[in-house]
Image (cartoon, rainbow, N blue to C red):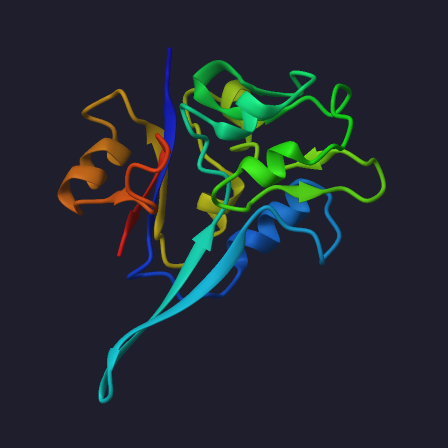
Length: 181
């Protein structure tokens, strides 16, 4: 079975929001709702200041805290290690939102359910020969790579090693999104 993951190279991210906009269109979201949020970070001291845009979304953790606290089983880990939400089981208690150390879940005010990045799960499984995500395809700088973490020859696995990519929060969770910073 494939274990999907992603690499985001923040050294190439220009903060254009193309990934977020594409995700919103893919998921039929209003402009104020998004599964991808951004943090702006500055490091260094004048005159050597470095500005970084860091896109954050569900890390699809193997040990997902959000799954462990869900009282109804609405949050679960699906095939390929994708963390999903069954909106028909979600009671909107928001325990998963509180448990997520990345604060990347969204409460849908209309349905009452909690939502999050789905890793474009439906597309990936309908098109296994060319698995990709809307956010990866939309990225104008190519700073996102999606693929199989268990295939050492995949573009993703090779890039993680070559670029020394790491989870954004170290070993806080077993995240499946890796960052180059």
